[in-house]
Image 1 (tube, rainbow, N blue to C red):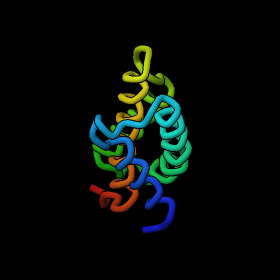
Image 2 (image 1 turned 135 degrees about the horizontal axis):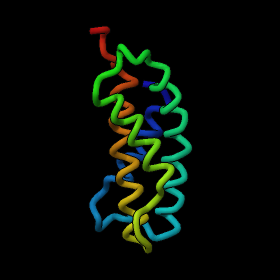
Image 3 (image 1 turned 90 degrees about the vertical axis):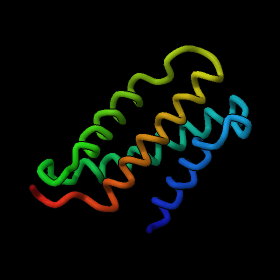
Length: 106
């Protein structure tokens, strides 16, 4: 595992922490920005996997990443921003799995 993957795993862990450990609004904004920045590089890596070697989960994670980064939080306020960060983290977790072990051609 390289340092980029380690950083992404740490960010995922922060975003998927229990609600009681949720950062303040500024912390959520920083976390979201970090998730997006790290996710863009991972998105490029996973996108490079030939379509015939991608699993359905990989295809879905690429589509979800595009959707959720474009859409942003649904709703207003701290809770919507926190849910958005958590959604990005779940999608990143799927992309990270895809990057670690691309499927064999079917």
